[in-house]
Amino acid sequence: MASKLFSIPLLGRGTSDVESLASYIHRMAYEHGIGVGELFRFCSRNMPAELNNKFAVANYYIDVGEIIRVNDTSDMLLEVFENMTGQNLRAGSLTWMRHIITRMRGEIYPGFRWCPECFSEMEALDEPTYFKLIWNFESVSHCLVHRTELIKNCEHCGSDQSTYRKRAPMSVCQECGQPLSKRKKRLTSTELQPSWIGTGTDIAYLLRDISREGSDDFCPEKIRMSLSKVFDHYWDSDNEQQIYRLLGRDRLLAFIHRQRPISFRPARIISHKLGISLFTLLSGNAEYSSSVLDAKWFCNLPPGYLESTKKRRNDHMKIINKIAKVTKQSENPLSLKELAKKVDVSVGYLEYRHPVLVANIVSEHKKFIAQEKQKKIQVATAKALEQFARIEESKINSMKEQVAKNIHQETGLSKTIVKNAVEAAYKANYLN
Image (cartoon, rainbow, N blue to C red; front, side, top):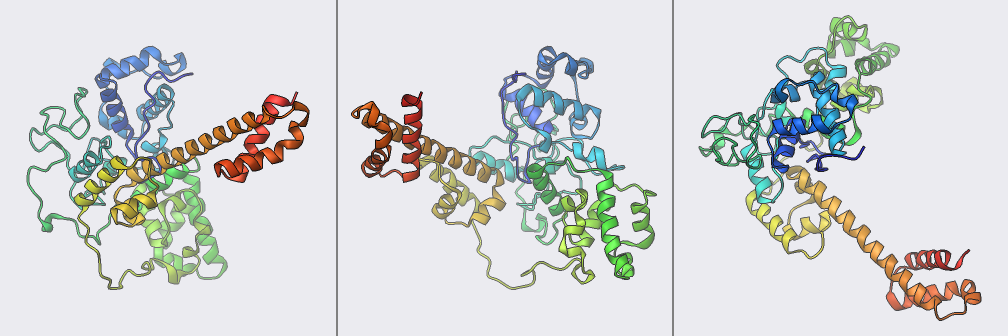
């Protein structure tokens, strides 16, 4: 079925800054110039009958928390909007939790939260503003990039941004019209979260991996498989006491033998202690990580963690303005390396500070390269047909190589492009 709504992409796909499904739905309403309730009613009128049967929503009102939580409603909305937009939106949902987590009370914040500094940077880069999925994890109280505390309500009128009226971009309060990208009170350095307290870094990596790789392999058995295989490794080498000291004997065996459910918080603790990523644990692949094969490696600090180095202090807003200026003035889409060089920062800096921008830069550059290649193919094909027209038809097949050489010398196009274009022109026009 063809999509009935604009095929607006999920922002931040493939990064830890992926947009939440709730944000996507509210942003979709704004982009269509209607309220969220009217958007739901439109979906109800235009979706296939089998989906409409699921879309049983009283008064077409669904609280933001219901979209964010893992339940039948969020699963239904994911299916509906994927069908109506033709977009894969799974990375913006927490549907994977439904299959692996038994208890998660207090893990998810059932509403919109935001980092004003992130909104400000999105605006400065002329990007659509949106609410990130990672902001819905209660344990992530501060922005991992700016180390500033997340906000739950407009500092001017107290609105939580859950209103169905969408009259402005997500970075503007829908009730009073004040910018959510500016804090009412300027923060001091003492109010920033220390850089060594990265309580949500493991979640950020998990969302990035899910956004790139998917979560189809996640299930409770995969977590138990991870723990069981690691336990077997130590049992077979008569070193099970080492793994007991790390995870606790009774708790570990209770998890492995299904006597105790595994919720998200214990999964995070286990992955941290084993020194592996959450994605590796949840997908059942812990045994393939070298970190778990030797107890001496557990929780090792990363290389360079305690080394003293001179840190370059960047003026982030100055860099953002420079990025916006460079991309606007550039005649053609820049590659990521070209942009980094012109702005005088590293590629790693851009990937860390602006993952959504990086994804767009890479995508646009790839499209540009593909378009330029297609233009070259069209030029070579036209030249081939032009030269074929001067040759007797009976001799064209034997002259293809010479024609290719002529075009290569005349245009400077690569031999591969010219050869393929000549062959394609010949088959299309002279081969019966």
